[in-house]
Length: 264
Image (cartoon, rainbow, N blue to C red; front, side):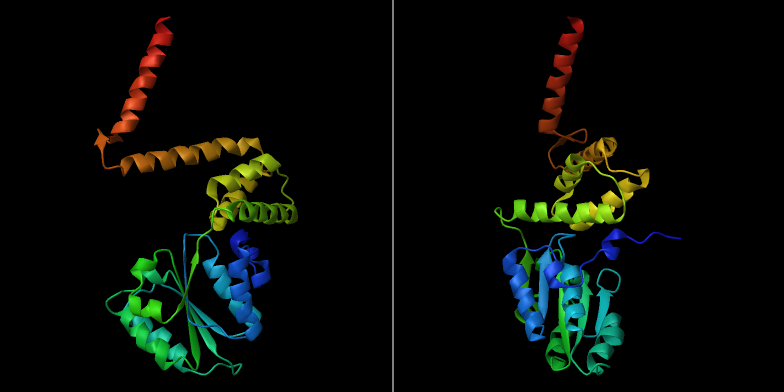
C-alpha cells in the first residue's frame, strides 16, 4: 500500500486552518462569509499556501471546482476543450463554479492567456477563476486587471510568528503519525526550508522513514545545503574554472592556512 503524501493528507480544508498572516486570512474569510469569490490571482513562492487557499475557499463554500495545472496544460487546446466547456456549463449544485489554474504563469502568453481574458468576462455570471503563480510578471496585464491580486509575501515582523505556527502544525502531524522527534531538529528543518511549507512536510515525511526525527538527519540537511551551494556556484556569472572569483579566493586562503598548520 502506497503511503499518502502528508502535504495532501494534512492539507487544510478551511481558511481558519490555513497558516497565513491575519490580514490575508481576514480577506479570504470575508469571501467565505459572503459565499462569493472574485476572480483571484494568488502570487508567491512555491509551497506558501496558494493552492491550499484556493481549494479551501471552494471546499468551505461548497462550490464545484475544476483543477488545471498550467505547467502540464498550457496550450490553447486546454482553453478550448476544458476551460471553456466547464465555465459555460451549469453547476450541479446550482451555484457558481470555480476553475483553479495552478501555475498559471506557464499558460501560453500569446494564445491561452489572451483567450482567458475574454472568458473571464463572458462567464463571470457562472464561473470564477482563481489563478496561482510563482512569477506574476509572466501573467499578462489584462488578467491582472480582471483579478484581485494577492501576494503571498511575508513581512519581516510576520516571519517568526508564521514559522512558529508551522512548527506547531508539523509537530502535530508527527504526533498523529506517531513519529518521535527532537524539537531542536524539527526547528532546524523548518528553518532550513521556511516559508516553503510543502518542502518542510515532504522532507519530514522522507526523514520519518527511519522511524524518528532526531540529530541523525542533520547530516542529510547539511548534504542538501552543500548541493544547493554547488548549484549556486555553477550558475554564478563571474567564475574561475566554474567557481565564483570570491569563492576561489576564500578557498585559496583556506588551503594556505591548512598548509601552514600542516607544516607546523
